[in-house]
Image (cartoon, rainbow, N blue to C red; front, top):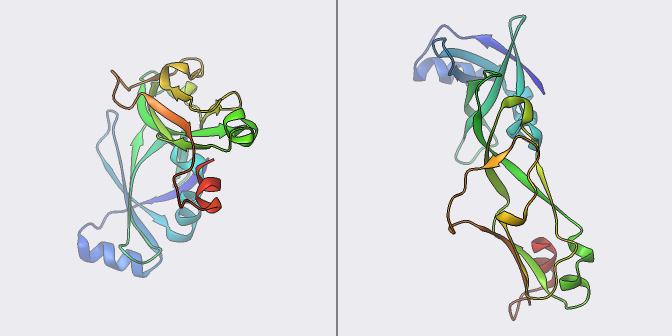
Amino acid sequence: MKFNATSRSVQGSSASRRLRRAGRVPAIVYGGTEQPLNIELDHNEIYHALRKEEFHASILNMDLEGQSQTVLLRAVQWHPYKQQVMHVDFQRIDASRAITTKVPLHFINGETAPAVKLSGQIISHVLTELEITCLPAYLPPFIEVDVGLMVAGSSLHLSEIKLPKGVVHTVHGQEGDLVLAAALPKPGADSADAAAAE
């Protein structure tokens, strides 16, 4: 994915407030051998980009006044109660160095799993994203998890997920190893809750 940026020479909170009033967003790019670089972004462009899942888990092409750089989204600061982006952090990417980041898990075939279809259970997701390490070229936009074979009372652990080529997860030991589990709905849980958990 691509986005546009402009160099920002003026810094400080008052300068940032002026930028935001003008429909711009202060941001920073850091990492690599270069110094951190202060930039500004168009609010509408970055707001809509941030609503796309792949913007959060993909190598991004930043067009900085005609020059392209590859970066990774690292942090977003939102206004406490407005739909306003306050600040964005990006990290420069070196194709030869491994990166560690989180990618979303996409669960498929949940509605046809025996646990759901035959036993009336719901599948509860313990993890919805996974921290991984890989070279930039191998970074997947998401990791697909097929839950179509889950039976009543079963669970799925991290060790059972097939990771894409060149990708390793950073979870060690038992903590965080459970990805999802099938169980009967709790008494009083309505159908909307069950649907949301699938």
